[in-house]
Length: 375
Image (cartoon, rainbow, N blue to C red; front, side, top):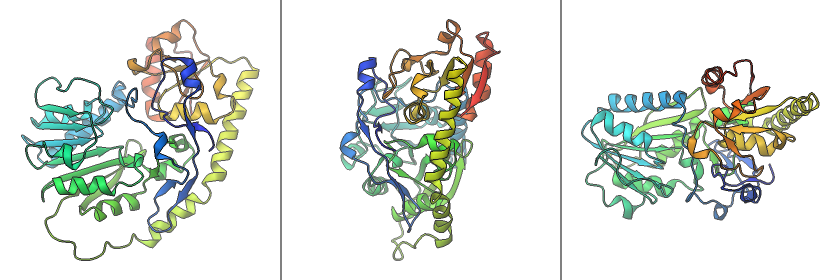
């Protein structure tokens, strides 16, 4: 994939800025040792997470239910009450606040893109607008009971230093929760829209378990969630010294991933071409189309599929995105209510998990006759 927007999670203040957004190439390769997928053309110097980077999904009730359920599960499973919770890559702080409110915990969030208040609803939550490092972690009042890094590792060319810092800060009872996009999903037709420049690495279950072990944690469970789109590992720290070299990942698991990966390029080309044909046919019929979702999936679709730049409107439920512009194509982002003035004939839904939510919103707006098509 040549010339895709580097920062698809950044929306611009003007159309001209969006059209001039930095671009980079994606050359996906697979590791024959651990099955990690990686962008061999990645240039870390192009990526900047400070400023207007906003990937929050918490304005969606569907995602909020998922995040709340995860927070309740972690608090309940590990008895996280009255303890210290750390979130690396805490974004706007919604998930960290939930962990603290549910268990009356004290939370510390680290994110260089954080621009909100340093405290949330109370003084239980502290946000550090910086990366988690030995220096910034030194201010923690105690060893953390839980360290979360949700959708962080896939952005890192080398996660080992970060995980080593986490391991030094952790105790033998510290729980580590890592969550990433599931590479098994990315290798499917619905998942290929999650192939974006800021993600240098795509973890399989084999690779994620392996990186946790190499960092000195003992995996407790590895599983997928959010409709198979996310992959997570829960692990515990240990005071015991390593018994020897980290075992190699199981060869049969790696070979299974490589078998799927070998056909991905051809599947990608056919899927993109298929959608290009559908958009061309819709344009010939004079069909007015809207795309729902100005996040990574939407930005990828708009920039990769020929003809997608001509889609009439792009919608997102995040009010912070309204009036801003999608990198690469310059689409202005509308709120759902804006569709009433210029109703679309077809709404393209970028994530099937939000289909019911979107249909209800369209019905509430009096647009229930609109055709909904899941990409």
